Length: 173
Image 1 (spheres, rainbow, N blue to C red):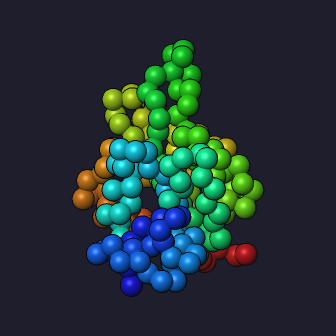
Image 2 (image 1 turned 30 degrees about the horizontal axis):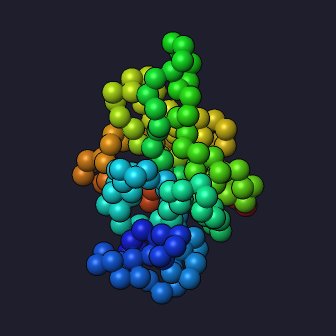
Image 3 (image 1 turned 60 degrees about the vertical axis):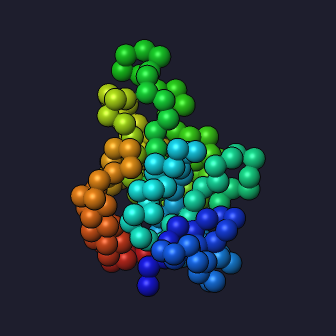
């Protein structure tokens, strides 16, 4: 069974946009992906193409934050593209909504990896938000893709996530 994107406020949907009743009452329970997408929706479109259970971090920081209840991989875009000084990280690269989400200890304790979305026009800051989160949360960057990703990116990420979660399930507790 393939779940669509679980939205914090509207619940999960199947490919036709119909809510999945169990996921609607608790979308985080079914999500091995948590993602943030800006108003442009590029990252959300990529996650949707994966066809996996996913929970969305709310677009507005004024909304209640998502609470994860199982291990997840975070998918997020990088904001900004220029550093104040050469070699310095771009200020504001990690979306504020993601910072709010990861400031919740329960969420931070359940992150297992990160996938970055970006724009190669950002140069050395391409997918920088994923690198920052990986270092701060001590998890691997599993993949990077540009804008909405390609069909090859979708196939690679799906295969990689299958292998990743299989490996995670075999780790001693």
